[in-house]
Amino acid sequence: MSQDLSTSNRTALVFGGSRGIGAAIARRLAREGHAVALTYASRADKAAEVVAGIRAAGGQAIAIQADSADPHAVTAAVADATARLGPLQVAVINAGVYRGSPLDRFPLEMLDQMLAINIRGVFLAIQAAAAQMVDGGRVITIGSNTAVRGGVVGSSVYAMSKAAVATLVRELALDLAPRRITINNIQPGPIDTDITTGIVDMLADRNPLKRIGHPDEVAALAAYLAGDEAGYMTGASLTLDGGFSI
Image (cartoon, rainbow, N blue to C red; front, top):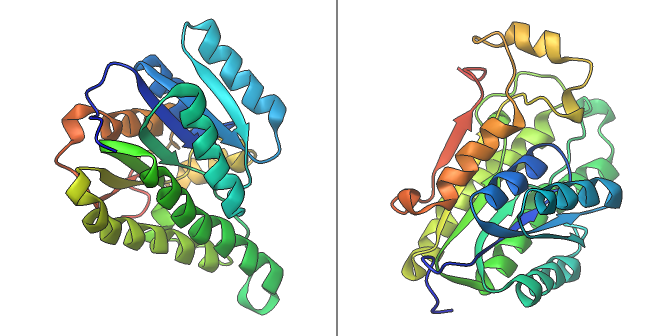
């Protein structure tokens, strides 16, 4: 598509935007002036809360049900977002799943699910979004600092999937560069979401800064990458973990 990022009405699509990091990114992009579409897999109630909050603050937002492991659902979500909100300028791929187990007890079904969502689903979302994105657009993936350093028994497949995302982003930067579309990867460490409920103190104690991160801190970095000032950065993985992986 030939339309440029500098148009006044910007549309952003956040895959996995109903809770935690994804919800914070959706709210931040809305505050930055984007019309935001967010996808959810099963929690329609949480997605509706995010949409209602954005609208109450004067923004524009819609929620779209889409399973990131389903290529038809991913493609349909992009088509729905652009049909209702306009040409796509920003795509954030946040959908993912964590399952942990030691090697000798790691079930095949768990392996297949994580690869389908965390790697295949990310690729499909990037592919579908890029096909409908204006020239000069922004693609942002949400990886994990485990791609750099995990250090927890049972997290091997999750770490592998996030390392694959970092490599995918680095190489896809070459594919997207002729259209001036940038693609970058944020690698958060422990963040205060429902995933870390009950283990915040333990994680904070292990962190050099003695705290864990807040979803809004990830959203701030995503907003920078989505903006005009980040136009010279592409193919990068940016670790945001308070020194956790040092």
